[in-house]
Image 1 (cartoon, helix red, strand yellow):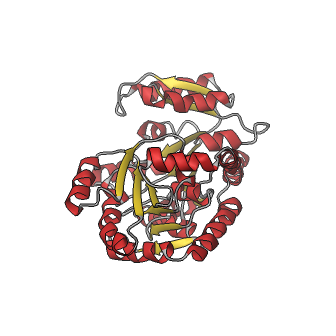
Image 2 (cartoon, helix red, strand yellow):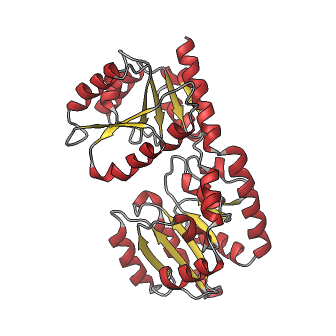
Length: 354
C-alpha cells in the first residue's frame, strides 16, 4: 500500500491513506506522511466497530474521494468498504484468498457485485478467485506486487565488510566463515519453519559449519523453540525475533529459504533477490511466479526435499552465484514497485473513463 501510494503519478492521482488508530500502525503511517501523503486515522476499537462505516463515509464526502481502494488480507476483511461500494467506485486487492465459511461466503459474493475491479497479486490467486467467484471472473486482473529497488540499492551501498562480520558474530552468534541460511517470516504454522528446522540434522551431517537463522515472531515461536531442543540443533539454529536492518541481515547470509505451506505471493523473496541471494522456497501460491532460474522450488511440508535442495546449493558456489545474479535481474525487470503502480494507474483510469 505504501509503495503504491508513493509511486502513483501525483499529477493524475492524489492518494489518501485511511486506517485505524491502532498504535502498531503509527510508524507505518509516518512513512506515508514523509512522502507528503495525507493520512486520516479512523477512531475505532476493533475490526467489527461500526464506526468504520460512518467515518469512512464522512472522509469520502469531505475529501471528495473519487475511488476507494481496499486491500483485503483475510478474504472476509474490509466489510465496511464493501458496504460503501454502492456509493463510490471500489477496487479491491486480494492478498491471500481462500474459501470462507458459508455465511461469510454469502456476504462476500453479494459484496463483490459492487466491486469494479478485483486485483489478484499472483496467477495462482487469480485462478483461485475465479474458481471461488466465477460470476466475478471478468473483473479479476493480475498485478504482481513490487518492491522499491532504488531504496534497496541505497541501503546495500552502505553495508561494509565490517558490518557483515559484526552481524554474523554479534547478531547471528556465528563465526565469520559460517554458512548462513536465513528465513524471514511470521512464526506461524502456515510459514512452515518447522520443516526447515527438521532438515538441519541431515544438512549438518554433511556441512557442519551451517546455521539457520529465523527472523520474525508469532504464535508458533514456542513450538519451534521446543523443536530445536528436541532435535538438539541449538548450535545450528537461532530464533532472532523481529529485527530491523533487514538489508544488512540478508547481506550477511548465503541462502534465503521460505518453506511456506501457504503463501499468497511471497514478497520477502524479492527482497532477498535484491541482495542478491539464491532462493529455496515452497512451490505454493504465487512463489513459482517469482522463482524461475534464480532458485529451487520444493514441495511444501517436505523436510527431506528441503535438505536435498539446501545441500545442493551449499556444495555449489558457482550455482549460487548464477541463481543470485538471475534473481537480481528478475526483480528489476518484473517486480519493480514503479511498474506495479503504473499497472494500478491503468486500472484506475479505465474505471474513471467508463
